[in-house]
Image 1 (cartoon, helix red, strand yellow):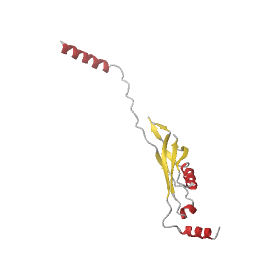
Image 2 (cartoon, rainbow, N blue to C red):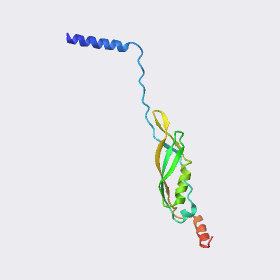
Image 3 (cartoon, rainbow, N blue to C red):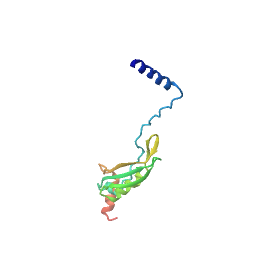
Image 4 (spheres, rainbow, N blue to C red):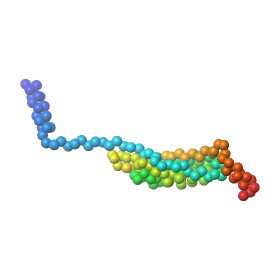
Length: 137
């Protein structure tokens, strides 16, 4: 008798679930992370490059929903304010593909290291600059 009641209940549930339209299950949209699109390097002050001055600036960048930096701040200095300023100036112009959550673009904070590595060997233009500096102007 118990088996019959259980089968009857299952049949009732199956019949009820077949009645009427069912709500479509909402599909979860996978999140995406911010992605760099256009990231030209900063201008490296030639006098610093030729003098062997380099370093790495680490910036905090808030990428807005439109894919443009809305905030750029120095987290770690390269040790040279000209290099830090060059990094900040250029990164403000970068373009990104914004991160998404549930299919909507959202602001995201990232850290961006910007490295300045003196060229080896020195470009020929460095010798003219060094000569000018040696002569006093």
